[in-house]
Length: 414
Image (cartoon, rainbow, N blue to C red; front, side, top):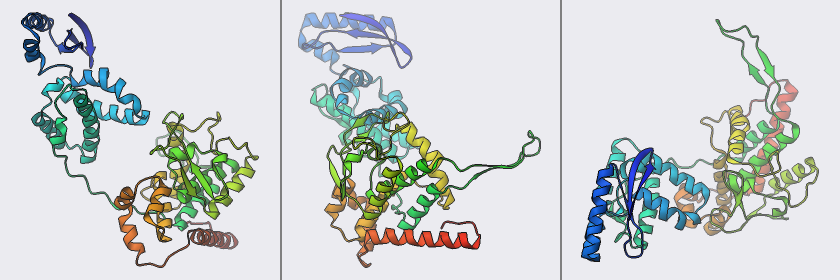
């Protein structure tokens, strides 16, 4: 047996360790004298026999915080993606640690967990956030039950709160997607306003449009890949030129937040149909960048590596958001939302639901939960051709741009 002085959550604790059934459980105490008293009691129970010791320690054992650190993270967390671990760490620190972190696993009863969840609801925590907390906590408790540290997962008996009703997804039509692409290819100049009264004197002036012709073409290609191939941003950042064939894009990897490569979300490769307009965009961009080797990334960062999450967020702020505001999109959607445009095009073509789900890289159940309103709506409309719709939107945008240029009027995308 031993008593060690440790730091937990910024506070000094005293940890008592002892041997039991071939393991070395422990318990934390705030005061040294309490730790000494417990140690003496454990020694006495060990002399009386295993049953007497079990009666003392059955309600205790490792705390939730200790189990996560000593058992769950090395045994189960090692199999999870880093992004998942980061998300779990965030919800644990914000919503679980303070209330349950120091509670022994044996004392995490149904009543205690129900009280914890009710407390989150009283403080205004959204049901979606509580669902994330429950997902992580259930994983930890299920792991403890499988390891025979507790009889069963008590959270399974706590009814989850009803989820918030989300607004139905609204796919951007090809006309809007093409307007965003045009704003990427030909961004307006940026105007700096004159100084206000009381500020240092400054005249109004204009800054040149951001980017170079090559980076503007890259930005427009990003929009095309998201809207016309339905790629996730992480899949887009990991795409190489040899993943593109005559009629398909092979999606077989993605990126972590730090830019390192990882498998796709469902750990499966999937071929995505390569629409004609997107194939044209890819050919033009490859010529513009000098026909790079086949193993080169489509969209490398300045160091040749995949974009990190920070680089992607910078692109969103510097290029995506201004382009969306140029075409008067308020509120500004996420680039990820362009996946809905690809799904909408496939559903409007009356493609089978299994085909659409595989193209997007998820299940038919997810397809129904996300796009049920679109599936029902397209049954009442005529079947469309995706490539023809994109081509028509591009032609109309070019004609409108030419007319505005000829008349001397500034182009005002719709």
